[in-house]
Image 1 (cartoon, helix red, strand yellow):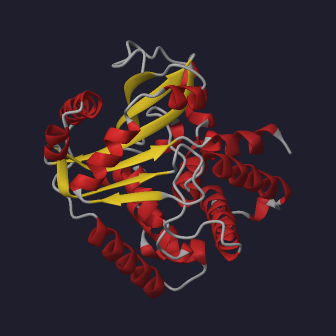
Image 2 (cartoon, rainbow, N blue to C red):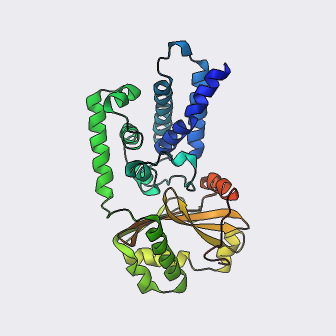
Length: 312
């Protein structure tokens, strides 16, 4: 392959990776899909490809759909039993992020909801909301009719909206203050204050420190508060499991405030928060080692600053 063709692909690699991550919810799988797209590009008769960007988008999207359908067929991604891979803000896979729809499409809350859609609905939703493709373009990418694209989009938006009855998104500074208050309440035993910081329909989802066979789910303010209090209570057994004393940092993961737990400079867990109307509306706790590799790698490249808790 000549260098011009390689350069042409590399110019669009970031966009393809962002698309694949939204479709698959996994950075590792997204990278594999992009590499497979490159191999298809390498083997293609490029002189017959009129619009390379459209061709690459079509190939990458359909490779991702094949992966989704295959995983579902093997029951590896049963809806409600799988959490997306969290990414530290600044990761190029989180782009584009110019509009509210683009930013929301990559939050853990929405990526989790997308697991409940069919692969076709998910693809149409991502292409439409995050990448602003028209229905005619989406129809060509997915080899469906324009009418079918519109129907998939309507169903996807309806299902996502039904689960996203939230107030306006909090600005980063306000959201951080809410999480700071939440963390202070969670670690001090102030259960009444903790409950007051939760929305009436709050939900919490956890992978059980990476040990649970299925996701742990909690609803109602009282149950979530109890789960959080237990989770943020330090014990010798928890420190042994984590590999040492934890430092907890406030950061941002997938566009929302998060607590990042670190042992000896290594990320061992994160809790991402969705804040709405000055309260915590949802929490996503992820500690499975295979879900944290890319986040940890990014963490090593930045100055983490002063932890909010330096010896948990």
